[in-house]
Image (cartoon, rainbow, N blue to C red):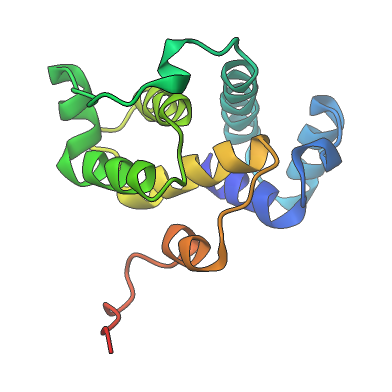
Length: 153
């Protein structure tokens, strides 16, 4: 599923540039993606879109500290929670966007969620809202986790 999400991000500049789901499924199948993965990705994207247009709540203006319940800590893991907190403190994510990222990560059948998948979730959220991270943050989000760590000068 994540290969499809990355493909969509790289292929379509904006989500409204994507074809309708039926046509998109055919295009993805023609490119070589598995039908089950395509179905999972389209459902995941549909759920993301539904959450992204949901009415703003008090969370959108929250300035408080977010505490994670046991299920969230177990599913996300400490590295993912730390990364989400970093993105929020860097103003890449609003509190409402943070909640969408957490919900989409919890929707996966993976525990703990890998940082690579969490980065794709963040990118897809920003993409679905027509936002793009600045160049340095994009590098952090889209860079390869398996690279040799960069040295600071």
